Amino acid sequence: MARIALITGGMGGLGEAICIKMAALGYQVVTTHSPGNTRSQEWLDGMREQGFQFHAYPCDVADYASAEACIDQIGKDMGPIDVLVNNAGITRDMTFKRMDKTNWDAVIRTNLDSVFNMTKPVCDGMVDRGWGRIINISSVNGQKGAFGQTNYSAAKAGMHGFTKALALEVARKGVTVNTISPGYIGTKMVTSIPREVLDSKIIPQIPMGRLGKPEEVAGLVAYLASDEAAFLTGANIAINGGQHMY
Image (tube, rainbow, N blue to C red; front, top):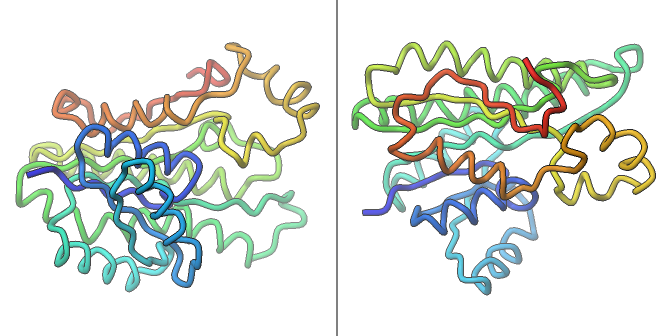
């Protein structure tokens, strides 16, 4: 039976590339969408036209009860989750001087609390079955910081602290936990930045001289989800074109 992969925030950008890659490798792919998202069916239909039979469930990843209910329903409909990719995230960029508690909380809840909310309901089952993959999508800005992103950088750095601690707890149980920290990837969000800003401010920071491709990050996710990656856990893998080395 095909393994089940749940990718949060899979409708668009990097999440969509991950969904496509995992499906192409034979996984049953499930993603989440915000409750009330009226475009989810449109996205599913578009993916089906491309030959991908994805499943999508409403879930507020920032709310534990919603996450628990979502995962419970997936289990009833499809079976237990074998691979969890915590990809959902938002930005609320502003200098710390201007940042208020509302915008701090929104990013921490969606980007960091969500990792607990989605992982908690699946981890024990993975341990009991003796196999599981938890992959947390962080950011280069969680490693080096970024002007105007105290909330985002804190949340993304916190993801890897979570990764390391949980990896220690489940290492002997056939479950691996890893972090991926992408740099600037050519998603619609990034490519919508004015070309002159990309050319003068962003790409010059990247030694490879280009944006990353979503498919390149998706390929790394696929490797971490594989049987071949069974000895790799607690790692933070940078995929940023050399922008930040450590």
